Amino acid sequence: MVYEIYFNGNGKLRTSFKTDFFDEVYEVLVSDEYEESILFIESNLVKYDNVIVHIPKSTQRLIFSVGLEKIENYYSEYAVVDIFCNGQSVFYNEEGNEKYDIDDDMPHTAVGKNGLLEVISNKIAAPLNMIEVFYDISISDEIEITAPYKFSLRWYAES
Image 1: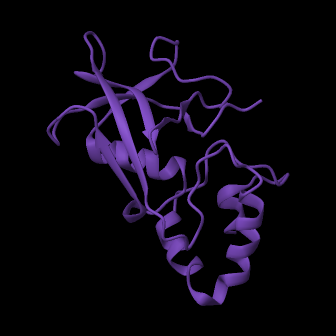
Image 2 (image 1 turned 180 degrees about the horizontal axis):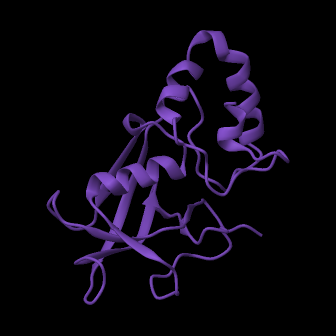
């Protein structure tokens, strides 16, 4: 069951992780009883070194910086134009083969700061306490941000 969070029926990494009950499953997974399962999942995840994914039981917090741009005639006042991790742009289309571009014809939605934190958490299968999100401009918690429905977070493009 835990394997299916990350991988599809063919053993390939999912484009979107199954995170519906992630917090509950993760809490059980990181107990000592499932050490072998974690090692098995980790040994399969490391094959995908271009994808940003939280390794279960890892103590490394991932820190993201979100680039925003003031926009007009959209769902909200600001839009996500880039996402950085360790100073590197990691914001790609869902397939992971091109950098995300707000001008591409993709569906978007409006989310708050906490909503974007949850979206990023789901994209990398990480508990909320293992990530931090900062913004390149100061915005209040009430501001809604336009973000794409589908995107991926990767160190480099899929070839």
